[in-house]
Image 1 (cartoon, chains in turn orange, red):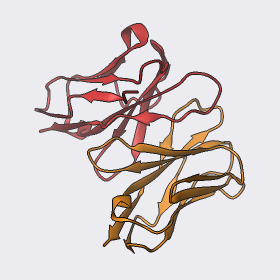
Image 2 (spheres, each protein chain N blue to C red; image 1 turned 180 degrees about the horizontal axis):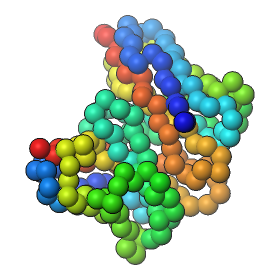
Image 3 (cartoon, each protein chain N blue to C red; image 1 turned 135 degrees about the horizontal axis):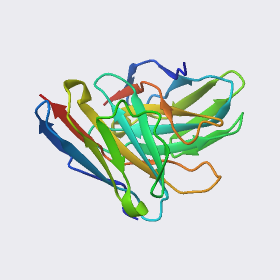
Length: 113
Length: 115
């Protein structure tokens, strides 16, 4: 069974505060980890694709780190703004398993003004 | 460039009826994927096309689901006959071909309700 877990399931953040949350995945047969930002009724927006242990990626105020040996990735939001409110999804791609992504349940972030 | 588009955005049908969902990928993307999110659960993989060929259909739930991608452009996903448990959001995604790990770009989904 291939489990991708995200925690917490939801969190409330005060505007201006920084926050982070976790994606855990199997450490064996790692190939890639994807992060998406998703607002309901819209297309999930691709944030990052990470492939190497120790990778750090940044897009504006959002950044992510990757530890393939222990099987986790952190997503950070610096100085949260109301427009950051969304569900953040991570998806794991296993080596030799084609292109299919296995998604976690998401972390729902609500930024309060 | 235009993103992945899906039609319709919503569909409400009765149990036993047939529904066909359409996906237009980003132009030039050889890879096309279907995923599904049932209420309260994770997004799950259904199948993967490379051009017009089915590369991986390991996630298709049963033979009531038929996906096609004639000509390697747009794709359709037909559910016949629909059951209550088929309700959910059906996402389509596309990506470039090749050995590099490319992002998969998602459409907004089709929300299917079976009553």
